Length: 298
Image (cartoon, rainbow, N blue to C red):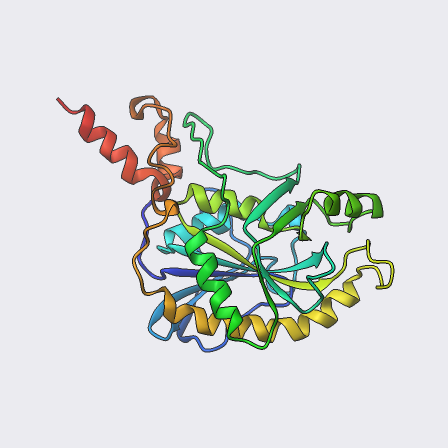
C-alpha cells in the first residue's frame, strides 16, 4: 500500500463544517484502509492551485460520537492521498475569561483526558515512540494564526487544550480543575488526531472556535448543544475565511520536526517486523524500513 500525491493539504472539519468553499476540480474518493473506513468519503480538489483533501470528522450529518470517530482510518487515508499538512477545525469551550465565545484560538499544548481511544498505529510487532513535547506543528500553527488574524475574529495564539472523552460535557468540578491547571480550552477531538498525525509525519494544527464558557462561568449560561450550534453558525464562516487565506501560504518546503518524526522513533529491527504489519503501515514507515534494508544488505 503506497501513497498517491493527490493532495498536500488536508482539512478535517468538526461540528458544523461539512464542506469547503472554493474548491475546483472536485471529486469524492472512498478510501479503504487497514483500520476500516474513514468517517466519510474524502472530497479532493484544488484551492488556488493547491491540492486539498477535506474530511468531515463526524461524518456528514454528524453520525459519530467523539469516541467513535475512526481516527486511525482518517489519518491513514490522508497519508495515502499524500497529505503533508493537516488542519483541524474544532468547536471548543473556553476555560478562561479572556477567550470569549466567538473568539478563535490556535493552541500549542494538549492535556489528554481520554480513555477509550486507539492512540497509535504501532504495535503488532513494530514499536515506535514519537517525540510529542510540542504536539502541534509550530510552523503550521503560526501560519494558521496569521491567516486567522486577517479575518474579523479575535485570535489567541497559544494555550492548552484539554481533550475530554465525552460525549457528556464537564461537571463543574472538572471544569474548575482544568482552569486551575491553566488550561485555555476544552474539547473532545484533538486526540488521538494529533498523536496519529505526528506518527504519520504530518504537520498538524488546530483552529479552535470558542462557542461557550463550559460550565464554570457564574454569569454565563452553561454549555449546551443549542448554544454551540448557534455560535458555530457565526464561527464557521470565519474559519472558512481563515482557510482561504492560509492555503496559498503553504507552498513552502517543510523544515519542521514533523517531517522526520519517525527518524529516531522506530525501535524494532526491520527483520523482526511481521510482513502484515509492514503492509498495514506501508505509507507511514516505508521510507525507514527500506533504508534499514539497504543498511543491512552485505
